Image (tube, rainbow, N blue to C red; front, side, top):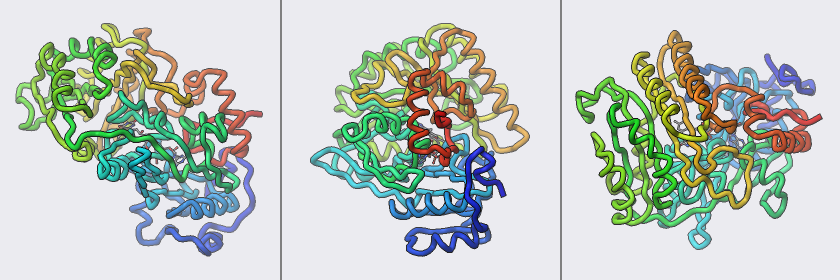
Amino acid sequence: MPRREEAGIVMTQAAEPAESVETLRTGFNGEIILPGDPGYDAHRAHFNKVYDKHPAVIIRPVGTADVVAAVRYARSAGLEIAVSSGGKHGSGFSRTDGGAVIDLSLMRGVHVDPDARTAWLQGGANGGDLQAEAQVHGLAGVIGWMRGTAVGGVNLHGGFGMLTSKLGFGVDTILELELVTADGQVSRVTNESDPELFWALRGAAANFGIVTWVKQRLTPVPPEIVAGQLLYSAEHAPAVLSGLDAYAAQVSEDLTVFGSYTVVPHDPDYPEEMHGRPALLLTVVHIGDADQAADDLKPLREKHPPAVDQVASMGLYDFICSMDAYIVAGRQWYDTVELGRLDEPAISALERGAEALAATGLEGELIVVPYGRGRPETVPSAVTTGRAGTTSIVTGVYWQEPEDDARAEGWSTQVLSELRETGRVVDSVYGNMANPVDPERDRRSYGEENWNRLRALKAKYDPENLFHLNHNIPPAG
Ligand SMILES: Cc1cc2nc3c(=O)[nH]c(=O)nc-3n(C[C@H](O)[C@H](O)[C@H](O)COP(=O)(O)OP(=O)(O)OC[C@H]3O[C@@H](n4cnc5c(N)ncnc54)[C@H](O)[C@@H]3O)c2cc1C
């Protein structure tokens, strides 16, 4: 059974999990699932079917005390630890072969303080949990565009969401955290209590422990917002893309927009002549009033009349639910680059990428996220993406059969290498969307000074690299 020693980590001698886990059961309030137990296969399964791992034990805490017990147990048993919040990271970090999965999916509590316009989220709470609770009070927060990604992954390491133009990434809205470290200690971390750790946790939390509670800022939203999709044909897509970063920078901060260069499905909702052809889907959310939304969308609609206009009034929670329709179950690959400029050479590379995707016959998309005026970083975080004027490009490819693995990844590699050849790619990488595990790329993304700051903190809080299933920061020394 592979244990932590395989990752170059010191371990203590321990009994096999089935036997040693009995020590964990005493006083544990959550669930402990072993191979052969009902639910083992359902809970070991990963969202991305590329991964088929068999943990020695799946531990499902219901609160901070359970997380402390789980960390202490796994450490003393010498088991590799995988932490799962929403379990969606494309690298499969949340599962382990032969180790312990600490699965936070029973920890989805959200408590909104309507007067302070804040919410406390448990470490496994997801986008649906937050927006459903916030809307009861006429509020909303930043936490991705779909219900299933959770605060532990998406917001602690970035978090591009429906209110990003106004509030920044999820990480920028975090005010306070509760953390369980490798030694099983619990601490509350704020910018006042420990600015260095607060900086590091907001961007690289997975390296420093398990965050059990997060306090986030919320903002008022009307009961009906304006949201939906505009679809442009392949012929019009380059013109729309060429003005997209300037548009995102100038339009009111109530509007957040991103694009997906994709291949139109054979679906009667779309014009037949577009079926099977590349097209650009713009997704917009406007949280101001309806008149302001119409004004803000006018330049898009008048200058570039879409082939299909599905933007309408609806509740923000209804909109996040509707976005789940875009999830494709099965095997997946994600990778990303950030562009300093979204101009002609980069747009041509994207056009070729979309044509190449159509030729593969696989489902996929080239996600284009223009950061416009950039993230308002009042309190610095370790996240490096999302600066003013930059644009993230994400390759997402979805398929079913293992024999297509190489073709799917090959398409992504080819598109990103053509983008690099344009000279527009900058060093920052959005780790939430990066499947490849590449410490040198992470180091360049953080920059030498911040990489060394993170390594020093890692040596202080997790010198044995107990938490290494992540975009890993090696302890200094
Ligand atoms: C369908 C889909 C939609 C997506 N949409 C968006 C989007 O709209 N915006 C966006 O920015 N990104 C999006 N992403 C990317 C997303 O940000 C990452 O996949 C993210 O890791 C998902 O969070 P999770 O909680 O599901 O991750 P998990 O796979 O559970 O965890 C990811 C990493 O975080 C660590 N971790 C998890 N919980 C904790 C915790 N409580 N404390 C410390 N470390 C923890 C894990 O160890 C792991 O290394 C999407 C991905 C998918 C698959």
